[in-house]
Length: 91
Ligand SMILES: [Zn+2]
Image (tube, rainbow, N blue to C red; front, side):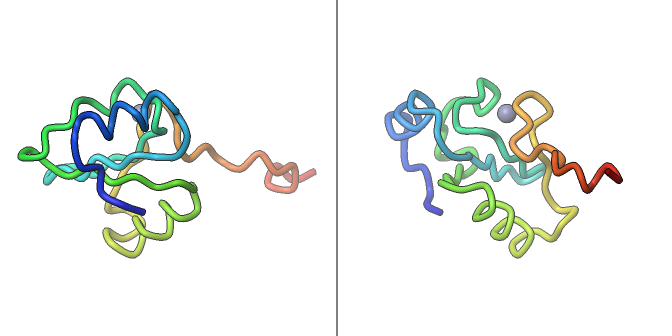
């Protein structure tokens, strides 16, 4: 986990499209896939963005920092889809 420092840094992460980016706004903290268009521009004075390489790393950090209901997943890129494990469907 690390902070995204500037627009160029963000552009590289988005181009590569691996990992996850948190928009840590005051009103809502929202997790995106790195390549998501809804991540928006890097305006360091507005609010921080945080980059995570792995989803489980992101989830652990978010739950510890904001609580399980203190943050949201992007409804556009679905960074944290529900489990597709067949046993969750009762098979
Ligand atoms: Zn997104």
